[in-house]
Image (cartoon, rainbow, N blue to C red; front, side, top):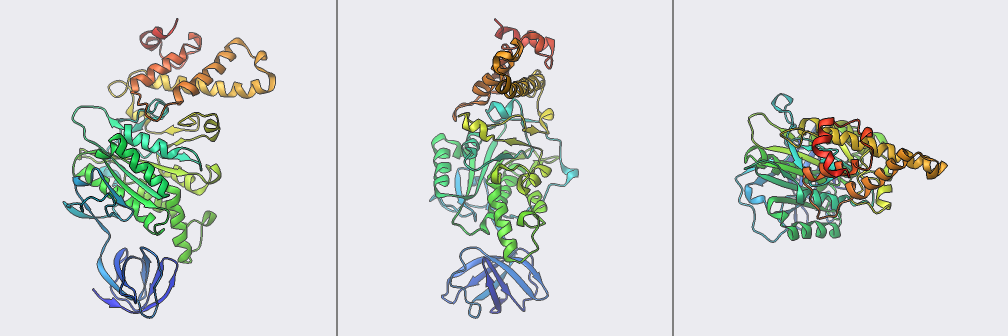
Length: 458
């Protein structure tokens, strides 16, 4: 371990050191201030005898002439074991729940790697979130990466903790865990997450990583990787099915932009670095099911779209990498519908792999298609009735209007502690179909109408 006193300049969270030798990318660095205080850092770039280091913490007190830098010859590693379950860590992986340090089975490099496509198995097992809009219409499948697109002020945090609390895999003897990573959140949000997990008992099967808004922005780059590393250990070495929830990916991308600006990199779209797609993919592609391994890693990344713009680079690039999206609608939120999931622009590309007989129920696909069709028609008729008046609509059109209203107030709307099984969700769909004439149910099979629908018709 060589020590250098050749710091040339400090720019924001970055420290530039000259005349270095044999320094590796992502290597951990110990920085000693003139006061004797020590801080950690990480090598971001090295070439031609110069190293660029991102410092973890404030750069206050750094003196370019008197600061000493020691390269430790290793990358960031996190101690992992099953003892992590039920614990709360900060964004750097240190316990903040007043519990003892984790007794590690081993230490693992947090950078990880995307799963080799040849080693992947096709995701095809249902994860029940207890939320009808997701389970019924945009089903989450083990090994899937399904983001939630939200907006400022929408209740995505409440939805995140409800999913974390209620999510489960069906079947006997299946171990399930949640790894929850909060990136760039306020103290108020951190208290909300911790109290909710403790109050409901969900903490017992969860691992929490909380990076606060006043923590160094460079820590936001690390937090999701800590969470995914812990999840991979629990899944692939302990045989657990792990759901990783990361909120808010927008804060992560803002940290990327800030660091890229400090490095004077040529900006891409809206100032974000050109490699943001690759960087996001390095996180999302760590979800999946591996051949020969019992466990799985499923990922829900939550991002708040700036100005509710779904074409903004963050949701746009996320949509290319992931397998669908859940969209929260501001109009539904204004109407008091919670969770305000706008099902029409939502999509789960792997849904067909995880539903049907033996997985959810044989009528699932038909019910989902019929609900989508009925709600879409009802929404269109709302616009028409606003112009011509409801009196000008036909009787069947008024039934579709009623269907859309009932769908929003009964199917989408759920209380924060309401946990619906997939059978309850599908039965609720059939109950809503009773509003429409049987002749309008063109997307469900006749035998399913007889088996599941007749009991709801008067």
